[in-house]
Image (cartoon, rainbow, N blue to C red; front, side, top):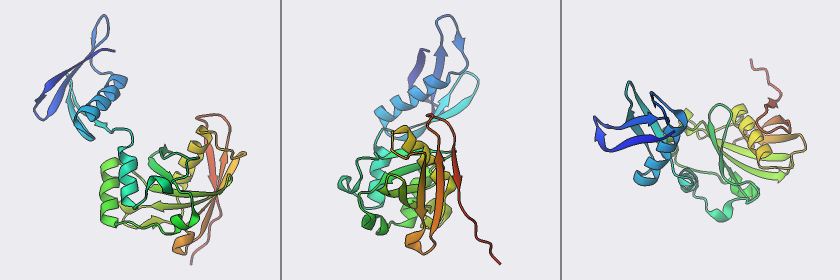
Length: 216
């Protein structure tokens, strides 16, 4: 789908039109995604307002690696701290959860960051949590989920992030043998354990389960 975009900002946004070989169309999703990538490459990571023929929308463009570098800076991590078997990525099970896999359990236990800075990053990027993990074995994963957007440093149990991680590990060919166990909250004194059942089909659902504690 060819796309025509003007270099001139119109009323705070970019004027955009979409053309098929035989007709102009009102909107094209994949062309808009491509435009977001072009704008990010040329002008930087941002949300851009678009003026279509009959509507105003926005597209968010982000260069590959920009969020990863911001997350590394947030936690004062370096490339050498990362486990090359599980590359940094954005996993999603309804909301984005950036995943940073660390080589050592000790480095995970030492997680720290500034809450205000973390909240600003998560709000700007639409992030649920940032999932720092360490793979003790292929089926036993230790996790800490930074949750600054929720007003706290971390969440002791995050089912959405567990589901997203399970899907991501399946997609990279991780030897999960059908399931992983995630230990979370241990370093904050609120240990939880989540079981993630992983089917082999790429894109298929995963199943997250655990035990509940009755309060009161």
